Image (cartoon, rainbow, N blue to C red; front, side, top):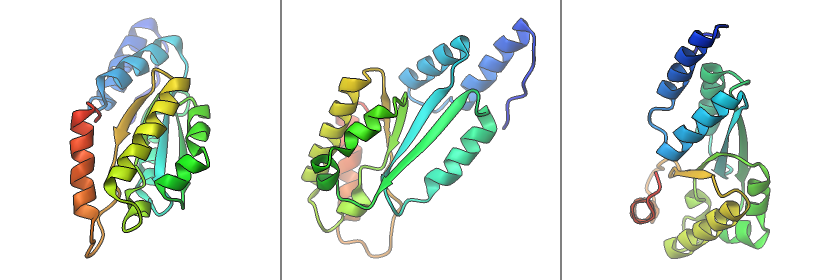
Length: 173
């Protein structure tokens, strides 16, 4: 769905409700920040982060921009052909923090780490990444998104289950 742009004050309230309806499945903190941005007439920023082989974020980004309009929502994509160990070693999390995104949808490099780094290492790197981003941007909200499933994975299903448990333990969507 696309929100129609209208001019009056009353229609602005309707538009806000329409935009918030589009964000109905977002974490509460992100919905609250979206509302603040709509009232301030400043764009809300979403950053998509993960392994270089991801493709879904391009489709989602296009759909979000079409639905919200670029004046209400901005997106950015940072994908890396690196393991999560390399991401931390090269301080890529500081690049991500510099984007000043209010919502970060992160595939925590499960795809790149698969068969190279144990899930405990991936989750420790994810924690470091989120802590460093939060230190720069305390109001950032995170959504964890596992990579797409692939044929005959050795460790993928274990990694995804561990990620779900991590998300539940840390109250992350």
